Image (cartoon, rainbow, N blue to C red):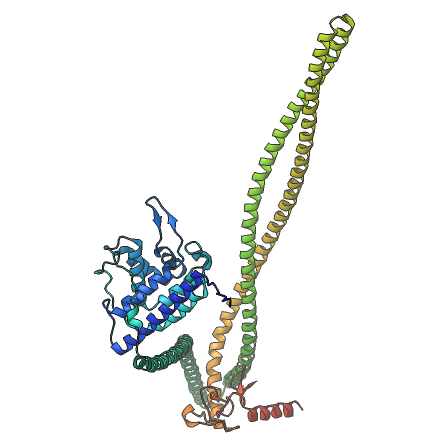
Amino acid sequence: MKYMYTVKDPTVVERTNLLNMAKLSIKGLIESALSFGRTLDSDYPPLQQFFVVMEHCLKHGLKVKKSFLGFNKTIWGPLEIVEKLCPEAEEIAASVRDLPGLKTPLGRARAWLRLALMQKKMADYLRCLIIHRDLLSEFYEYHALMMEEEGAVIVGLLVGLNVIDANLCVKGEDLDSLVGVIDFSMYLKNEDEDLASEERNGQIAAILDQKNYIEELNRQLNGTISNLHARVDSLEKSNTKLVEELAIAKNNIIKFQEENHQLRNENTLILRKTQHHLEATKVDIDAELQTYKHSRQGLDEMYNEARRQLREETQLRQDVENELMVQVSMKQEIELAMKLLEKDIHEKQDTLIGLREQLEDVKAINIEMYQKLQVSEDSMKQKNVIIDRLEEKTNQITATMKQLEERLQKSEKAHQAALKEEKKFKQESLSKSESLQKKISQKEKQLAELETDLKIEKEWRQAVQDDLQKERETVTQLRTETQQINGLKNEFLKVQDENKQMRTICHEQEQALQDLANKLSESKLKIEDIKEANKALQGQVWLQDKEASHCKLCEKEFSLSRRKHHCRNCGEIFCNSCSDNELPLPSSPKPVRVCDTCHALLLQRCSSHLA
């Protein structure tokens, strides 16, 4: 018989053993802490064992780093990165660095773990580390526990430690010289203890479920509180606006009362003057009658004059009465004009809102154009610098080209001189043929070298010409870009001019609106009086929220999801589905919420009026 043995990877075995030990230590710590029933101290044995197990888990697969003193292998390096990933951990890292008794990085890591447990954020901090595995790869091997799934499982188990309250004194402990040895005797239990642990596990699960439920309730309540705060802020703002409008309206009422009082005083003065004048004329008439009785001669003309004066005065009185009637009709026309003005004001307010939105758009466009201008100016400056550099390069290249041409001419002259010397040497003597052949061979070598130099220089010249063409093309591109930038500048100036014109128009319209608002404030008072009289005539009753528990139409009960809504026509309370219509009413020109029945009635009335 042959037995097949499966060989397991030792790193996998180490990871599973460490995971099991972490499960046992976390479970035992939670059970003992719940049975203990108060805050845990640093002398508590299950807590000490938990820190030892966590230290072994974090040490698994650490890379050995060389330093001047020797080899370094500590868990403080990966834990120190947490403050960069999670800003809440900056306080723990700063307090660990400020502790006076700690000298080794291992002691700092142990203090960090204790402070994270007290803060109830150990699971969150280690989750940030596990997510960023590219940073962990600098400290851990690829097969380490923190780089594999076992690390994520341990981090998930650490969430249960948020139930525990710990009060650990980190300053007094000698964390540098602690020996991290796991005591397995703590986790060897009997069957009775297993049953008790199962019961405790059930209790712990129930407590955790209750805690999660309470946290969700807290989140929902926090959301509703934030919404209520926002509503309160909006109501306060609207209340302040209404208070300001009320103050303005009161000031306008006081002004109108003063004007009314002045007009009444003027009217009384005019009546008194006319009465005095009539009395004076009556006295004159009586005197004239007496004088007429005494002496009738020559008084006919005086009598006629007095009668004419009486007629003129009666005509004046009739004119005054006609003027009063005209003023009354003018007042009625002014009221009609005020109503028309209100409509115009609403329309102008809408147009003003549109103009303001256009102004904001124009401002945004101006800002964008300004930013683009700045960017284009910066690019122009950079491109000008590049053009200057290119011009310098072209000057240098032309200078080198001139030098190369001079060298070419010199080499050609030398070549021609060499050819002449060869011909002379051949004609002079045949006896010196051997020496000449040697010289010729040397000169041929020189010629070959010169020809190779010439080829190299020609190739270099062609490369320089290609570079010159490329640089010229870039210069043309830059010029086109500068022309585009100039066009953008012109467009920006046009937009600025349009913006100035729009501002002037807006300023004029704001002034006109201010005048209209003054007239509106005067007319609003009259409209409110008319509204109150209309309400009194209609006998409308505005139901309070407490009086209605069901919708009037569908008779469904109101709740948090089904809210109450008032109909602005009849004043009754309905749900949203039965009052989702909007119509303009005589009390308000803007469309207002109306129930289904009132909506149908109002539409019938409108259709009958139109017919």
